[in-house]
Image (tube, helix red, strand yellow):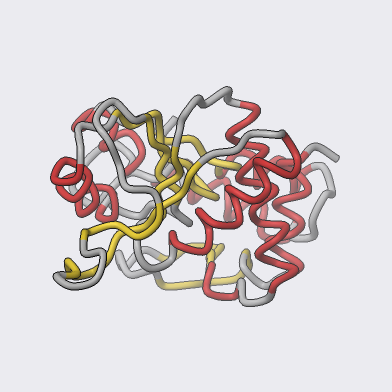
Length: 218
């Protein structure tokens, strides 16, 4: 199996990717649901870091530092940094933001690597629904230093248009900020994995395709 197929299987086995009938926050009825809150063990986090690292390596994203937006991005950035070094010999820094600026001790807005002008950073997040995490992080990065955003890496690109736009969240942040978002897998990969028997779920295949036809973007 490819690492993308392995990741999809990993999500299913850990109860992160589920099929059925779900009402999303948007009000849409979807035949699938992604709950990254089901990642909760050391073994899961270790494997997750490997998939993020593989995505960064495969897409040749060059950077100095991984940034994990608080809170979900913090463990993701840490495990990705470890995997990049252990698997690919890439020793990147990492940091994450505080929810509130610390005015005592070492102070500052970021924990870990203190960002400097010209530094290239990769943002690490779980999924992207609206681009809110990026919009909240950009002013913090600008306040810290004049960094260059090499990209943002997420686990799954839903490839789904927004409620008030014909673009997906991934497309919107690229159009608005020029930040390219890389995903370990996307919705087409998941549909292909069902078709190829990598995971079970053929009974949901037509509903998946219909949902994609109704709400999907390329």
